[in-house]
Length: 294
Image (cartoon, rainbow, N blue to C red; front, side, top):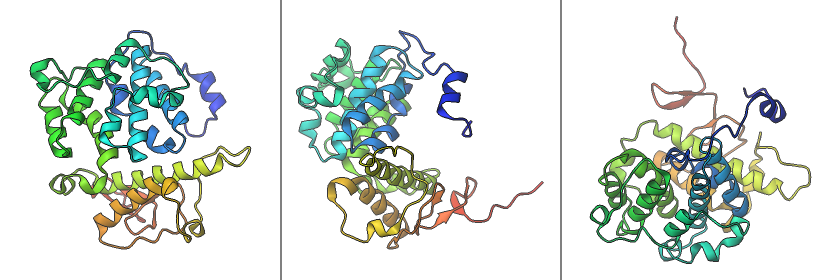
């Protein structure tokens, strides 16, 4: 699959094979990598967030829910406050990110604060599989989490029904808002495939930053295949390197080491900033030697 060009893929597959009324919560559950990659170009991040959902969920409500949540994640990465993120005017104040397109009425209702119900479950908030309910439930969990990621995640789960998806949707926005260091340590210590997640996170941050820089050069739109360490010898701009710094901080917090990244190619990055040829899922580590047995 990776060897096929975009044109070949489009000819071989109907990318938008989904249909109207297909509006499950899975489109939101997997959203975060898109706005994390494109966050420095909000209008692109929002558009691609919607497209990422449309590939499998053809309903306009799914597309618009992904656009709206992608915009919230971008705004969180840019440092907007909780009050700004949950403001009934958020959509109006960021309308240019949406290409001045109107959202579906059910998504607009959520953007206007339909989830702000102090009673939560008792007031009708449900973590259902329908994307509108899921978006409302995740935003309720964020709005009412009392400045605690742990509280919000548990509240999302305790809504019942599709518990893991509701919590995953909450975690995308809450993670962007709180940052790695404010996640519960007891959860970080026991998370499965932790090193793998950190490597992928670092890869997304660097690829996204390089994509952003390449937009200033006409004719260049490819993803990163190498990274020159000299780009990081000078003092980085806060606005451009926010995500990179967070990923670096998360790696340092894990390894206890000062990370000096050298040349980075499209392979895993270990906690020391070195290239790892393989990811050992059994041991949850990056290794330069993969032992194979018959």
